[in-house]
Image 1 (tube, rainbow, N blue to C red):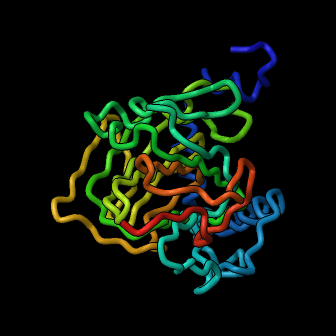
Image 2: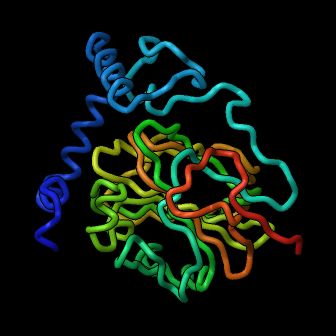
Length: 284
């Protein structure tokens, strides 16, 4: 690790990441009214959060900080691009990386690369489906809307929960911590779509309370890899909600080789909004 790395990055190697995240989760779920109101207002001021598009516009009306952080938006605040053969952004955020997978290698940041096998927890032949395919790494800033939606119609066939570390995930840490996405806790959702398999991966991070999905009653967590197969599949439409981060992080999209093309405007550091077009494909 380079000596020039900031103290805030270096210290993460020795911090009790999961303990800190559990404590943060307790604070985020606290219902002590003066405390949760102060926490929400402090966060809004620090990160310049706008609640104009939120279903609940008054900060005091949220039950907890997590209720505020995972806030829902008003209907039609994020119109879903319904043009044929389009793929839409699953989140609000920025594009951290985007491009083509070189055999099984993906760019993390600058000089750092990571591989499909480790990202997908070495789960059999799964990574072969995405060799030489397309990928995008999408970073959600603290001020963003933190719910994750489906970018294309599909059928959920498998989820893989992978326990791991909880390094903070942002442009600074991605540039200095090797294999951060393969080391961190994550949830991998595999779907069958009209253009073949798609993976949408939710990456956990420091202070991330939990990753919650619409098909589970409680947040997914634990100390072992958990694989769940859906024999009949769960049908989901473009724009349907998949889940949310309770204090959030990063989403990675994977598509098969030659399945689609990223739109030219989609470049590193481009801001994106959930529901807007980011890619297209040809009808098979």
